[in-house]
Length: 296
Ligand SMILES: [Fe+2]
Ligand SMILES: [Fe+2]
Image 1 (cartoon, rainbow, N blue to C red):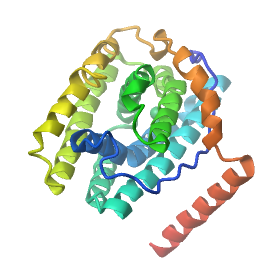
Image 2 (cartoon, protein in one colour; image 1 turned 45 degrees about the vertical axis):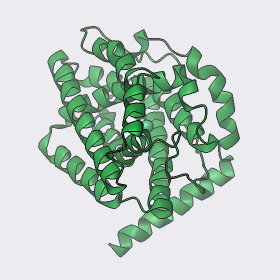
Image 3 (tube, rainbow, N blue to C red; image 1 turned 180 degrees about the vertical axis):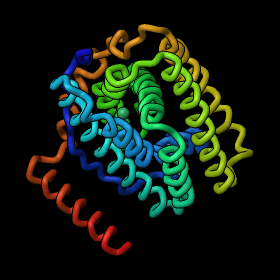
Image 4 (tube, rainbow, N blue to C red; image 1 turned 90 degrees about the vertical axis):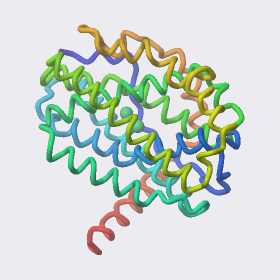
């Protein structure tokens, strides 16, 4: 099967300045801010898991177009992980949020998943998670007003992530279809992915709110309910596209939303590192990683 992706997938090396992060950076609302912080906490290790599960099957792919898309998918997800790691570190350094235990929990849970689940199940889970991120990205791109008054750098970072999740939304799915394609495993894995995604994110949000003594902040809780149900309707508005995944014959690009990212692609260039800077940053990252390995 040839790839059905409709657009080029471009790897962009970004460098967002995370200084001066407001504690409740989403409209001063602790419930929504901590929900989004919880999401960001799941990203670095979650995305490394996605890379791992696609890489397991890379050698079985013979279509050169899909091979190139896999490489771009890996590059994009690795960069998302780096920027969200910096964002999470800023939450720890600037506001003392207890994220270390949550990051450790994510590492442990995904190490368990790698042992417990077969490579094909890991890939099916990744295809499900990728659909989840793609429909959340689509919502963010459709309702940019929802992030219009949060500080520029954070809305830019979430928009960059949303653009790239859109570009590569079909890669894990196409790899799954190519190497397995079993319908029941695909939909069963999506149901499991949904359960884990909700459980982990809401549990982390609850724990961060408890840490800040904000569980009883009902004004903020009502704002969160409005955010999830109505404006922008982060839960309710994604339901039709979410259910679409359970249809036999589904493909992510049957929902063609290229028009939502075209104009943003130009805007993203202002944050992108020049090739020399990107090479330097990559080199520094490699050295830091080998230092960490040598020290371990
Ligand atoms: Fe990502
Ligand atoms: Fe992704």
